[in-house]
Figure (tube, rainbow, N blue to C red):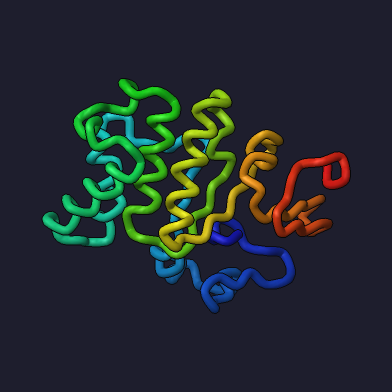
Length: 183
């Protein structure tokens, strides 16, 4: 709902002062330009290189080519994949594919990054590597909202944890851990 993939049946979803539930369909793109999204299944373009996958996010907004190049290189350095710019998704590990997806999501410099189970398909070591990348992005000023069921990640990161049950917030922990209390 934050990204306006779905409309709320009641209540409001306010992002950056805008009620996204009330946005006309033709105006949804405006809010999406300010939000990055990282999906569990990467959603990479299989016939495009790493560079092309990340650049695509800028091309659709009409960013000039020279600006695209510098931004893509910068975010690929941030996620540790500058040496893979000519690789295709099938040539990458799951963790590398997820880093490409993260780079694509942040290349526009969003204030908000939504991560839907970004470590769900990864082994524990790779998951923690992805979390380190996300932590660096957060330190640079991007707010990250992440959905996860991974107990180890929640306990390791000790970030704010909001527990939902049937769409309702039942707990909010400033430096949360996954304990029996909030399961």
